[in-house]
Length: 379
Image (tube, rainbow, N blue to C red; front, side, top):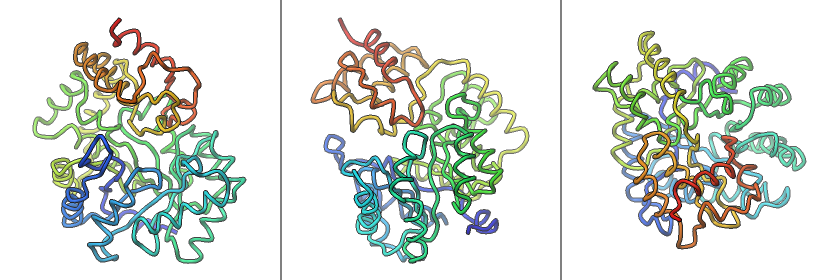
């Protein structure tokens, strides 16, 4: 199990490999040379935790090219995740095969932290029916993984139920950021409190909420800049979650070298937020709660099964330019850039609902697509 000393000694910044830089955005090809430079900066500053997943397109192969083939195994921790709804997974055997595929892609003979991916009420049955819980215990006994846990997107009540039923789980990965702390849908704070009640170390995902807190709305930006003109908006977001007791590591999905260099600059000698700084965050939360926006983190779980091939996260991003910043022309231009060439319009949604079944944020996607069609599509 993971003891308190290990959790406290873990360098608090983790390298999330979901949003790696692309050498070719059209073909979704990762820039492994740039990823290697980012990896070297990350390791040189004392950080160790790399977060990949079977369904993060190219992340595991990029980890091999940029990390595991270039650095000693003792220098890093590598993670991956088993997703029962991944493409090509249709039974117990194909689900379990993900692990061996991940080992091969990553170029390692064991994985440090292995997770059951994106647990929620609508997915748990497959994990149970396919004996995945027993499978990860077996992998640990065989030395193929060092620690196992799960990432989670659901209610605090269901998290409590899972941790009560599976007390041997060693850690949990939760979406926590100051925007979602008191959200009635994400319920970051209450999920955090459940994990703490069960004494589980916490890995934080989406601390900057898909990048949106790196460029917050004007009322929020004004509060943060007034408090500290020299601190970046991203630093407030990362330091907030890293300051919470019981946090093992905070994942940041860095997409370029500048983001990496900025994040390591204030996280390598991490200092928790002071009492006064926490009050600043509380004021920012109040300002943020007053603004309507689509709480999308651009995870893209909704897109692979869309029969109309609608680039839902990009259309949501376009709509947020209108909602948050009132920039109608920019919103419309962003919308136009993300339809056509095989991508459907918002108005072409057939309301099948598969996207909403996959959405970790529980967004009413069909309803929002209707609003986007009404406001951003030209007649």
